[in-house]
Amino acid sequence: QVQLVESGGGSVQAGGSLRLSCAASGRSFNSYAMGWFRQAPGKEREFVAARLGSAVYADSVKGRFTISRDNAKNTVYLQMNSLKPEDTAVYYCAAGSVAGTLQSWYDYWGHGTQVTVSS
Image 1 (cartoon, rainbow, N blue to C red):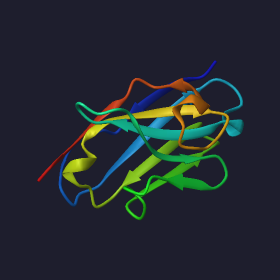
Image 2: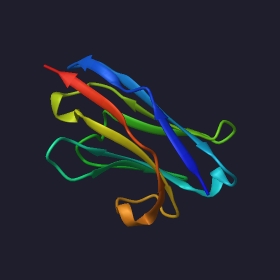
Image 3: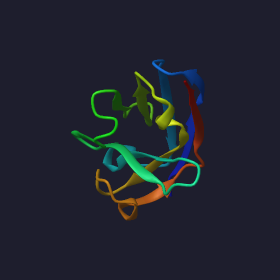
């Protein structure tokens, strides 16, 4: 069993930066693929980024967001730069077996953290 707790969300102006953190409890963190997803109001939850070894990104965030992990701290991060109003969403951390885009590949989910970007 893995429990995930996100932090670091907040409000920022367009062009600003935020860093999200996701702390994981449980064993074998190193073996889990870690992903970030987001859900904007009125929209379906969508893939943002994932990492086990190498990283994978959605086209909409490529070049602006960076996913990293610190296995010693059981934590995964999402550094978000050059934020846009369309990045406004609840951001969720997830752990699973494949560092990919499908939500079904992830077995454990956090409760989410709100990110609001104003123009």
